[in-house]
Every structure is written in structure tokens, then in C-alpha cells.
Length: 461
Image (cartoon, helix red, strand yellow):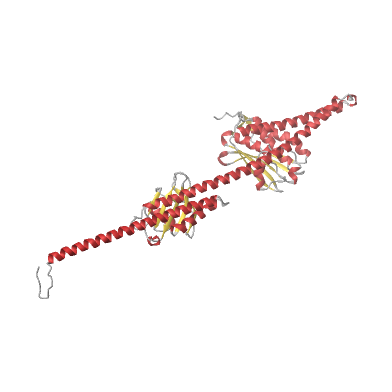
């Protein structure tokens, strides 16, 4: 130690450097600890905010589940909660069009000027993904950032249901930090809440539809039973009444002519009852999938001609013109002959029932796409509205209007015809307009036809 003239204590340069280094280390250590405390505090704040957001989302979702909001509106409400609590600029819900296809469409979005209308194809579909300022803009980051049109996105995808949730920001400063791996709990939790509530809402809707369908089915069956009881009672009353007259002790009052007339009426009523019972049995077999089809080659000209001749008398009684287009005599059709005749009888009989006097009915044979065989029955009858066509095709249903209520029937004609045609691999199409008539077209596949053959066709296997 060196004492100066003023009494100051001298310090060597080496000692000063050591003391300075010591204080610098202490200051750096203190600063590092302060940064760690700030980071821990920030991390705790972020975790608390994620927990609060997820808790609020769950709470609000349960409230939404108990409201009457529909499944189609649920996505917007969920996104509103996410936007309000996660401090993001935009959010969207997506769904995969076909599981495993990697093709998505946006179902709900907030913050986008226009929701993406065209499908979005992703080269790969991560279950969790996020971008930061350090992220390289390459697949899948390129496609995901393009959906929200923002550089910073947070994404979650549920592979089981195909639903995805994503949020995005314009800059990292919006949330005072970058997205990070810890956000996985938040984004996946939000997606899980949406999927759970959506499943509940869809189940509720399905239940309501099922209840409505069951109520309609009960009403239809009740109406059918009422109609059927009337349809059965009328011929039964005739049979019983006429049989009582013929078997009474006053049979001497019956002439041979009257006996023949009564017997004919009994036979006609019996055949009517048999048709009703056959219709019920046929539809029961179709509904249970037990309809037996025995295909054989028939001449289309002969089959259609027989149905036309059988219906000609009824058409003439009502003053209706019944015509058929020319058919190649050599054309064969591989169908169940009995069921095919039943199809034609149902269609022509329906057309006659619903066509007023002086009307016209035409049966046409055409060859459509891929040489399919099309048989159409067109009439100038009362017609149907487009919404009534679906009702007419349902079993036990009859159109509820003044014109159709005047015409007897069980309401099984068209459903049975549809079932018989489909059993042959064909289809039934109906075009109709009120007051302008109806065209029922049945289409059989080309494999059932043998056009232009003069000899007996050979069955195709």
C-alpha cells in the first residue's frame, strides 16, 4: 500500500480489475435471474390464460349444448368464444370432405372477408402445428397460413372425425409472444369441445327427425288401416250380402239370370279382395328383402301388348284413349314375367284411375344412355306437385286432396312397382305437373335386353 501526500490509500491496477470483474459477474447473474423470473412469470401467465380460455370454452359449450341452437350454428358460437379469449385475429373451423383425402373445406370462419369456397388440399395433415417468425414457409406451413391469410397460425386436427380448428395472428406482437408447443392444450381442447358438443347437437337432431318420422309413420299406418278396412269391407259386404240372398229360403225368387249376375259379382269382389291381400303380401316381401325373382326371356311386344289389351276395357269405359308405340317384335327382355306384368298393370291402372274422361294414356319404349331400356307410361290426368311425388312413393301414403280422395286404393301401387323394378336392377322416375299429367318412367339396365334378335334370345349370365 502506498500513502499519498493527501492520505489516500492506493489500490493496485490488478486489484481494481478483479473487483470490477466480480461486480460484473454479480450484475450479470442478477440480470439473468431477473430474466428467468420474468420468463417464469410470463409462462405462468400464458398457462393461466390458456387454462382460463379452455375453462370458459368448456363452460360456454355446456351452456350452448343446453340451448336450442342448431348444429349448423354451433361453429360460429364456438369461434366467437375462441376469438374473445385467445386474443387472436382470425379463426376457422374446417372439415375433411372424405376421411383420409386431405381435402378440407371451411365450414365456419371469423375475421375472413370471404369464407373459402373451393376445397383446400393439404400435402400432409399434422394433428398439431404452429408457426413463428423462425418458421420456414414450406408445406404444410405454406398451405395453412394461406387458409387464414396470416403468417402466424395455430392448428389442431382430429383424425377420427376429420374436423380441424385453427387460429391466426397478423404479428407476434398481437399476443406479446409467438405461438409455442404449450398452446397444443388450448387448440386441441377447443377442438375437442366443439366436436363433443357438435356430436350432441347432431344426436339431438337425429332424435328429433326419428321421432318426427315415427310420428309420420304411425299416422300413415293409421290412415292405411282405416283405408284398408274400408277397402276390405266394401267387397266383403257385397260377397256376404249376395251369398245370403242366394242361400236364403226364398231362393225360388232367384232366376237363373240373377243367380249368374250375383255369382259374377261375388267372383269380382273376391278377386278384388285377393288383389288387396296380394298387394300387402308383395310389399311385405319387398320390405323384408325376401322378394323372389325368377328371370326368363320374354318378348317385350307380347308382354306390353297383353297388359294393354287387359286394360283396354277399363279405359274405354272411362272414355280414355290408350295407345302404345311400335315395339321391335324380335326384342327380348330378361325379367320375371309375372312381376313384369304386375309392374305394367300397376302403372297403366294408376294412369287410368287418375285420368279424367277424354284423356289420353301412352306407353312408349325407348333406348336411353348405354342402351338402357326405358318404358314410360304418360297420361293427361290430374298430375302431382313435385313435393307430392315423394309422398306417392312412400308405402301406406295417399295424396290428401279432393281428387285423390275420391279414388279408392291402399297406396301401395307405386311403392310395390318401385320395389319390383329395383329387384330387377332398374329404377323408377316420375315427372308430373298438376293439371298436365304424369309420366312414370322405368329404366332397366342394358344387360336385361336383347334388341334386334329374330330368334329366341339366349339368357345372359
